[in-house]
Image 1 (tube, protein in one colour):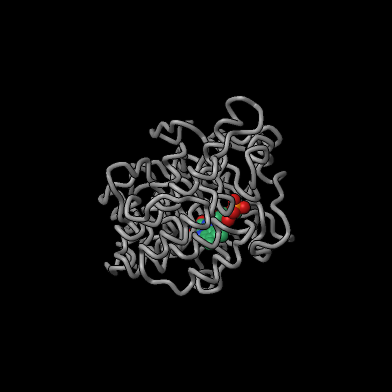
Image 2: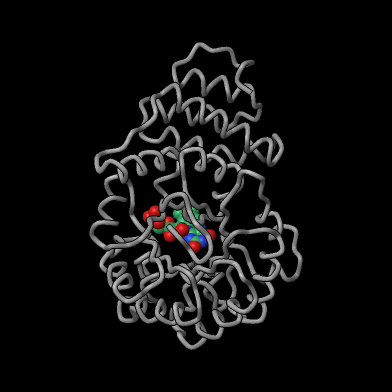
Length: 327
Ligand SMILES: Cc1cc2nc3c(=O)[nH]c(=O)nc-3n(C[C@H](O)[C@H](O)[C@H](O)COP(=O)(O)O)c2cc1C
């Protein structure tokens, strides 16, 4: 799949997710074949003001490619300046967030609030387009509410402004994450545009990814929540798309290895204290729905020590390996 000058090895993409798609998580999903991964949304204002937190979201490493950096904001000049900063920092692609429905974002006129203002979208995208030679994408929702469905209109504006691909999460902003994604909106956008369209929303299995591509005609799929506790879903999806049948998955002992590696990466990235704190939520997802999972989660929620957590992971995933061997 091509997005502007960027040639992806496949069309299965990790969604930007605040608090989740940091360097360790992106590195993990890349091992399972993910063709493009995004940072979480980064405030354009924060980048322009040089705040440490915003710059930290840009942290990357040699193998963390191709990297899409997502920015949000509402001021065209600030967004253009942020795009220049991101370009200088070595990203491969910039995505403009026009889908975030969170109150503190929309009250500033950013995120999904932009879906209400097509004229402003045009101004922003023209400015950002001029500010960076990198491939540029826009991630949109269907619209603000069911009476204002504007995905086709906004994506047409994006294409006219020189955007290289559009990502569609077809829920309205007022839906948040409730109800279901209306994939017919992805199909409508695809019919209108010449640039690639990436479909997103409610892909929970490899078969869903296959179905989204076949029913909407979209060029690529983006996976968010289904990757939580399940980073190997990219392998499943790729094998399903290649062979047109349910994909492969990981056996228990391989999952355990991945989970331990994930924790070690978080610790390497954030230090032991913060790394464990951040990793704990992933551990909850990894064990969700598993027999004995609730007891396991109660046990680990108060453990601070890395080796003790590793020991619990080994026990939970039925292993008699030595904890000392796992780091
Ligand atoms: C915890 C969480 C954080 C998210 N953060 C972002 C974000 O920073 N930027 C963005 O465009 N979308 C964000 N999203 C939305 C996802 O990118 C995606 O559009 C949405 O989850 C629908 O896809 P899914 O059904 O595959 O999860 C977030 C979603 C979740 C669950």
